Image (tube, rainbow, N blue to C red):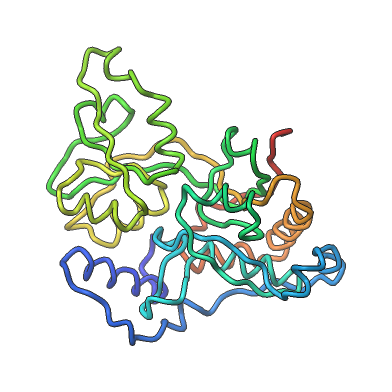
Amino acid sequence: MRRTPRTIAWSLALVLTVTGCGLSSASPADPALVTRPHGRCDPALAATVPAPVRQRGTFLVAMVPSTPPMAYYAEDNTTIVGLDRDMSQAIADVFCLGTAPIPASLDAIVPGLAAGRYDMVLASLAPTAERRKNADFVTYYNGGQGFLARSDTDFPVNSYLDLCGRTVGVVIGSVQQGQLDQAAGTCARAGRPDWRLSLYPDGTASVLALRAGHIDVLYFSISLTQYVASKSPGVFRLAGRYQRSLVAVGLKKDSPLTVGVHDAVRQLMTDGTYRKILEKWGLQENDLDTTEILNGRS
């Protein structure tokens, strides 16, 4: 990923974090991080918004603000920035509304949707078959998995067998945790010692654990692992990439917003706003040509 003014803020935060320093909460958010491409208001789509949301004037959007460059706190430690933040605002633009981001942990997101605590989720969420039983999804990003290791190691990770005998960090509730749970027994069948899982509440905590040597490798989204490795090459390295997987907006099961969000994302893809957002964060290689609705019936 290319280094731009828009990514310098997180680079500085990462360096200060791994060296044990802190950021001043008095620092304002970098305007380059907050400035974003805007979607075009569509009155016809705005008319489809449920009355309570329309009267509120904003979508309540759950995010996990510890997964740069998708969502993280700017220098003021208050403003959430990132691709997911920009994308949520652009979707709201099409509905002629604003957004209110709600920080959440990954494992609480789908239950929170079901409970009505927010209207949608943009949190690098993979629309797995299990999740589609309890929520609707609208795809907007071509994600995947990555393995992050310290720069003072040199082992590759080309498959799960390369994790055997190692301590592997994953975020609680992540698709990576589910994948490793399903792959339990892989090492035993190969006559090798099992991997040891260490669970963390978010991406920041897991990166710090790797830096401190509490784990050998972090298994997380390719967006975060590739980004961290590129910004601190003397500290971290990308040990391997794994299969691609779609990332989607999460909505309550059978939400009245599902079709409209799908139409909004398609409009952003058509008019170029989507591409501009990806380019702002240096993630254009992960674009999708089209969007689709995924639920328990698809």
